[in-house]
Image 1 (cartoon, rainbow, N blue to C red):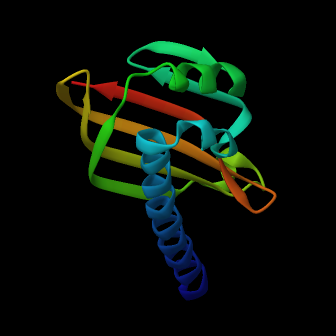
Image 2: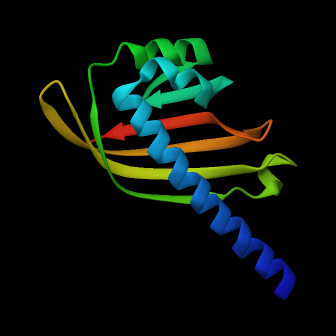
Length: 133
């Protein structure tokens, strides 16, 4: 049990580190350089934005490109490795973010969750679920 417990602790630690770097990169690009966001998404990415579904990388990038200017304040985030029972042999992590977004002179709190999948040693967004309140 000691070795598998240590292995799980290592996976959790790595997921947290990768999740934090990912969240910082994602919101930096969203706020300042959306034209470079393509590298973050898997080809079959799905975004659910306040209940609206956007399928496929091209449609996702078009959607994000059409959003008004945004200023994001990330308040907290968490990341966890996803069990291989769910993902098979592909390493995946779930990243959950909370914060505030200012756009169109309005500020709203938000929750956003990302399922990231390793592809050629790079984390790609498979699903992105966003809700503001």
